[in-house]
Amino acid sequence: MIIVAEYERTFVHIKGPEDVLMDLSKGEITREKIIDSAHALFVSQGYHGTSMRQIALNANIALGGIYNHFANKEELFREVFYAYHPSRELLPILAAMEETTIEDLIRSGARKMIKALEARPDFLNLMFIEYVEFNNQHSKQLADVVVPNGTKLVSHLADAHVKLRDIPLPVVIRAFIGFFFSFYLTKVITQDWADGKMNTADLEYFITIFLHGVLKTVDG
Amino acid sequence: MIIVAEYERTFVHIKGPEDVLMDLSKGEITREKIIDSAHALFVSQGYHGTSMRQIALNANIALGGIYNHFANKEELFREVFYAYHPSRELLPILAAMEETTIEDLIRSGARKMIKALEARPDFLNLMFIEYVEFNNQHSKQLADVVVPNGTKLVSHLADAHVKLRDIPLPVVIRAFIGFFFSFYLTKVITQDWADGKMNTADLEYFITIFLHGVLKTVDG
DNA sequence: CCTACCGATCGGTAGG
DNA sequence: CCTACCGATCGGTAGG
Image (cartoon, rainbow over the protein chains, first blue to last red):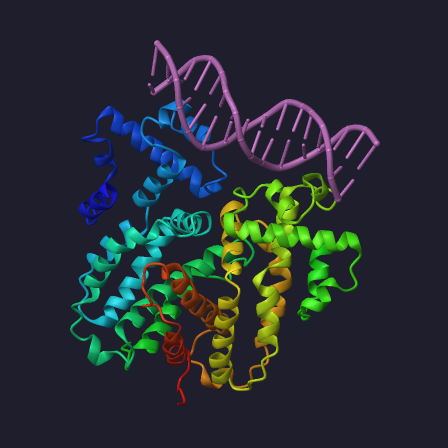
């Protein structure tokens, strides 16, 4: 509960590196170091593939020290999951957009989303771990905060209903997120064996497809 | 190597339940039981979250017996990965399609793909485990078999170039797979907290979006 | 294919 | 926040 409230409070605020070391007591710094260390190891090895000893070593403290901040391994994962959840970064980016027409919003939003995902490959691993190793059990209470904030972003699209095809807005939003996320997904999942066939430049084709897919008419 | 050859050989053949017990020596039956048992546990708990003892117990043999068939835990996962890879089921389904126009192919292919994915939720978990816990390292040699077979399927689309927008065919294929996979993904990932908002009936809207996205004109 | 065992490592804790 | 320790469980093997 504390977690979710804290998440909501800092929801729009993206911390710069300078903030991280400021205003934190020594204990809070250690706590942050543990979370960061755990995050790095979890995303590269999975939850069960990471030991508390590895986390302690990586954070430069003794094993026992971790339990001064977290009751057990799962609570530590939960804190990592909240602290590094993709919505924390993606929602503020989308909220800061100033485009006024739905077409510009789609074009610009797609590029921003892909850019953010490519800068943070850990997002994908974190979500996968939550899905497979925790059966998605932590996502619900996070969704209670994220979904309302997300829908608020699209609630005042003045020209949406005149330019969109006859498709419910929630479906359009789902298609937008899914389609461009799949652009990222197909790229990273094939990057080791598709020798550059999955090109980032293809994003403009994806945007074209989506625009023609949802809009009655497309400019340019 | 043996694995990949065997995979190619049985690639178009979907085994019925009756085949599974036929033509197998006692040792091969045990081997199959171990693979099935390991698969069920891996997809529900992850690789590192599953112990060899659990697998043995589930397969009704002693722990040591597993090592009569598999050198170690990772080799066992590799065999599970090959035996249960989604392409094994999806490619034959797509290969059996008889639609002749690209529009019918998209409509029918999308529905078949979603139906197959919804019948086999283990696909998603298996791919996630491979991605996070094995860094996608087993996917390459499988791709060497799957990709050529997959591209063969779309190589003889007579009306593609006249009906498609000016978008490269590989991009259209990538968009098709990604878009409809994302339909499935957004559904399962939100199903615990989006109280039915992500509806299977929305698939027809997705098909509409995709058709308008890639075709110059859409019937119906 | 099972029994019985190996050393190593796991998550977690008491006590200071 | 560290040292030293706990019982349990891990992947894997020898020998029959």
